[in-house]
Image 1: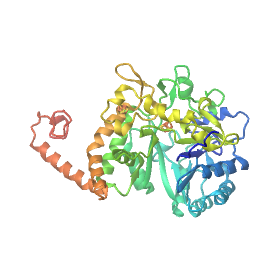
Image 2: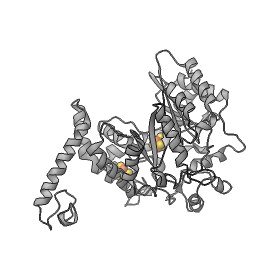
Image 3: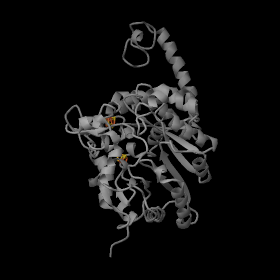
Length: 447
Ligand code: SF4
Ligand code: SF4
């Protein structure tokens, strides 16, 4: 007799509306996933909702279960759907298990009623914003082609009025990628946001699909757009560049580490500190992955949100229990491959402990000696992780000594003063004391 699979913790993102969305963001290749379900209304029905909740709560072994919603745009389901979800959770949760609800939304449909519901049920609401109006509206557009900024802001204000826990998800693309401090300061000072995520936009394409990909994914292109797959070694022009992404994170880090530690929480920075301590909180920078799966509106389960495509469909939870699909050899192999497929350049890399090669979906570059499988963002990752290493070491030391890491802000100011004093003492043609290798006159300002 087969032994039942051992439950293991995993994260499941449910997409109750599949790819359906009320916006037409030009970089959102997920809109093309509607092609997986031709003729479908793309709505999770009540039986699907109940199967999802029941199986999720049965399959999770730990004391806390995250019930997570994403899209498309999940609020298109309407509030009664989510009220019903909360009822089902109450029916199926084991005594003593804590429930954390999360939802990722474009925010355009949120009002006081939604916000009250989120607050009453302790939802963490992720809001997609790409920066101040002119940067946000560059790609996050309505079906009619207009900007979505005003609607998103109205949603944000409703959330704030009701004291809902929030997280800003900013996608970093070629257009806002050159404006890191405008974006960061807008979130911190303009919105008063305290939890931020910066996710790189990379639209991968082949020689055959690059022109169609570059045209965008909105309804205007519904007849011609290909089904997005993680294939090809090209990136559409909206994608953030490698050094651009590294410089984006670095600029925000330099401001954050001197004034905002402990008051603003940036996912990439928390992850770096966690990795330094051997605690992996984000699959992208963990040695292996495979514990973050996606459930489509009809019960189809896929290996990952970035691999909703036929080759990565594990099965359907109406036919095979969720716990079996999560523990299946195929899914374990998917997660292990992240480590096994690392090119030698990554294995030898001084920041491997931070980077772990990044997400496999972005590994379509070639190393200088011709080995495939290098991450498209490598140059940016390497520069960023090297730049932050001294401060991360300091913060890790503070944490290990059971002190708050915010002391790094004073330490950075002290180092800045020391550097300025050393630069002032250096000759204009001497190597800059900052260690950049450049002459002082071209570097830290004695010129
Ligand atoms: S493929 Fe990428 S996003 Fe998906 S689980 Fe693995 S690391 Fe995470
Ligand atoms: S920085 Fe580049 S070489 Fe180093 S682990 Fe990351 S992707 Fe690999």
